Length: 188
Figure (cartoon, rainbow, N blue to C red):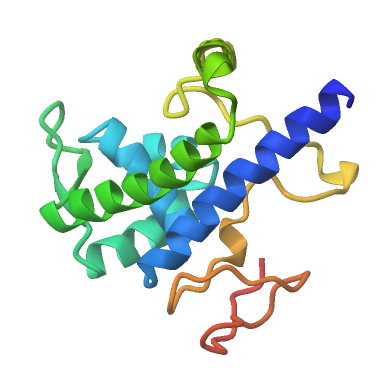
């Protein structure tokens, strides 16, 4: 098996684990969970920093935050660093949701690790730790690379596919209606 096949398999497996865990939680999308996870790692973020963390634009992330606040998962406060800036922080309900999300993902990942022969588990964990360190990006402060408009392919950010009404991801291309609630999606 070639390295690219292994890496793509890993990426697909991890997205699958996250998607299944989000499905178990029921009322929250993977994109919303990504934002909540970034806020759990870095409380008191400004909106622009959260936008970088989720790989979206500020206006799209602002709408995402509106939905997270309405759901009771995120709180807006004056920033401790500057009164001109709003700070975003998880509420107790948001903390609980992310903890349940992490527990679901961890259970599935532990089950996968149990499939590795016991004598190789420590080496696998060590290699994964090195791999994770090798990715090495601080998702909050690292700039999000933008592909030139004429390159084609999938967008780096799927936030335009998120339904503003229910938070689900549209699967048609280009997205026009939410598959879950039927809401018309804004043109992108």
